[in-house]
Length: 121
Image 1: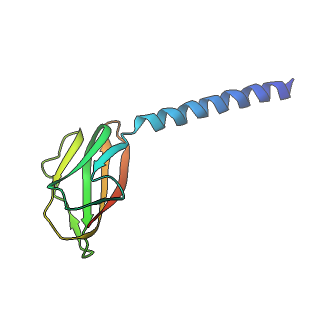
Image 2: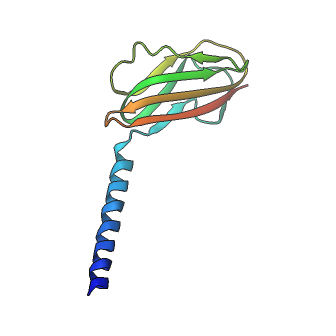
């Protein structure tokens, strides 16, 4: 009898844990796409970097590493609200690999971060 109760509790706990895990995964605002796309090759640096998130988020930090390996802090002063589409103006810094690292808060309060890179030929 005790084993049967233990098994029922084990099943209920496993189900509850799975539900909570799935719910928390859905709560985040993942990055849907970028322009340029991650690991792409482009002929010239675009005028703007575009980041599109599944849901609104507030960007709190973004850096760009340019081909000279300089780490540039992106000014996010105009992005104080929760939005899903970011357009970051760029200055041409030559050919090479660019790495963008970002950090922010999803509209649900979860901290998010990520990165993407691209090559300018």
